[in-house]
Length: 344
Image (cartoon, rainbow, N blue to C red; front, side, top):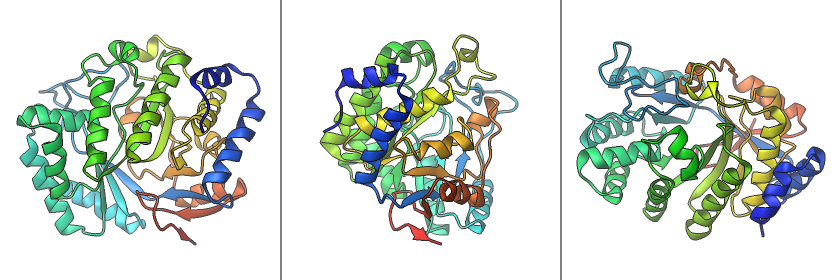
């Protein structure tokens, strides 16, 4: 049984960082092989940077008609996949802005072409806001949209667009984006159709501890009903070059480790908690393996959204394996759904 909301609030306010990490690590070792920590080789591909939402935390999007806006061609996407395969990758994370002119047929054609050319590649694509946008632009229900995308090759769905699942926060940082209920509906529908998804949280955007706990409670309740989430991935807001960044204090490494540990304690029905290196940095990611995390994510061959916000952290398979080994674990490569990892 996970901790209560009040207990989570108390732990986030606590100064006992070491004790919190030890408690989270105990849960981690009960749920996962205590000898092993996993990682993935995949590639982020941002197929368009055009977007109509204008979120205050985003430095990546471009308004329609912008000269530096783009929609990638199929051949460009395929070139990126070829590069990923050459590095031993197994999947792509395909995401983009909310484009008002791309209807479902465009996405179906893209997925079918990729599935035909790369049957071995796992297509982990389109966050909840994107799928909701595709449904709206195409005049379809959420269920029909997901079903058609899955039939075309969609294999699982990332948790992007969650930020903080509390509408008090969302109204301030992303007022045009989907509501918490709409995000939840998309994921519940995907789970009902047999697709696995991830759950994410972007914190440090001016929210209070209670908002973070509300977020954890919502995804714990979804998981209790559906069991469809593979993992929870918390990460810190990257403030540079964003309108919101001028108005909030950046989260610290201590804040990140606390959030990671509380997530592990609270989300008792999640199998995996991921420690991120992208915004906290590789050293904090490594320490996260002692704060409840059993995975360090992907090498992220290409990452554009957080890069636009000034984050320049990069890594590779050798470095991820090294930080896992130095933390006392056996590194193991996994696939997108945390299946059949390989020890090297």
